Length: 611
Image 1 (tube, one colour):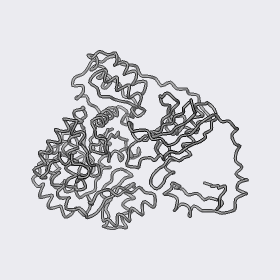
Image 2 (cartoon, one colour; image 1 turned 45 degrees about the vertical axis):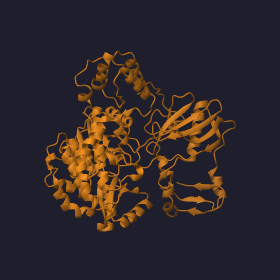
Image 3 (cartoon, helix red, strand yellow; image 1 turned 30 degrees about the vertical axis):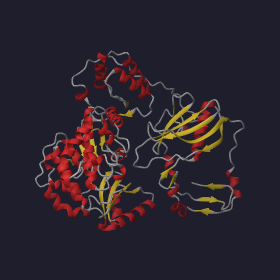
Image 4 (cartoon, rainbow, N blue to C red; image 1 turned 120 degrees about the vertical axis):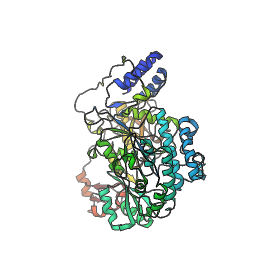
């Protein structure tokens, strides 16, 4: 991908302005799709060349394209509208200031909602953080809807249009509008009535996200009777639970003790549970004359779990949207049953994207998933990057960017990947599963810097053993891994055995949690002048590097120690055994999930363990 981006950039550097349309058309619409792709948005050949040169330097620029089972099925663009939990103070303000399309759309929503709410959506979005009222659902829901409408219009300005729509909870209102089933005045009416009705249920319960499938979750909830309900199925391994505060806390304690992910949501409501029953009549009355229409693009309902005609989105449907569980996983499965898709999460923060990315291959085809915004990252550059990522994954923009066919022109040939195919190496064990070109799991690929350097994405999928090194719920990089990374850098630089001295641990490297989609990039550098190795990381492209460890690396000056005589060590240890039954209940919070029987000395000295 790096060579392909550089070749295309060089082609554009020497292209005349009148050639640009034909080059872009040929590359986008007439060239075959490969396994990985990158895309840029530009108005001139010079802009495109600069963007492609920059992409060639970023290891994350190459995105795996989305294809169907045959590899030739067209990929659809799906807008997935997030629900409660994605809002945050200050959301949308950067786009209000910088993007006319976003500002116009939010202003139109403001004009329609102000008579119904008695306050301004735009003014509420600009409230200082200390004065925000986002904890009130009657405020959060209208603001979330306004931001989502603004993002749809902004993406349209970039040439990205939905070919299907799905929404989670309150996100279904924006999805129905995007699908054409509700016009904007009708959608604003639903938002106002829905949020006003649910406001009266504040304090009646709480909600939590649980890392467990629906079948197992239902069995866990049986012991709580009507006090807790399954109110959402978000992926094959993720559910949402709601109900009484004390019962929810008890469930959380039980599941956490067993190592199951459990997180209470910052909501003082029990949405989609029996706590909503008192608002039924009022909501039905408020929406009794609601006018809906046939959809323009397919609308996939998270109430029914499948496609639904727009004419059915009457008042009774929106009551079901409030009361019944959110069948997001079923709706996504129904979408993917109709072919490959790229999902753009429309909302101020990534909530649904982790659910989409955690889908298993045995649950159906894997979708592409791109969050349009993230918390504190909703500026124009972020939205533009999301649009280009969607295009690279397979979203089509023919009618927007190429209103008429261009002339097919010559492009740089495919750069063949040349690699040595000699089988077998003493370092075969070091390779990362699925990454044929990475020589060491902690170093990763060589980086183009002035000194020897390597970069690697660190996560529990690439390095499964990391998941067993935890402190509480946090996965922490072991100190021994820093030592191994420094040694590996020395072995490659000196082309022989190396040793590390004076290793200093500056700060811990903690991996993001389950719902955090940031990719941690670890960089190892080795200075040829003084032999100092430095290991740093950053959670996002553009974030500053954080130093974690430094030490001096040199050629191995003394012979390596011989093999350890384990039999001799065991004879010196007293017979004292800690069985798995005694060990395992205490171990999961610290990462020892299997708890093997251990034989050891109760005092200082050697320890042996047998798995």
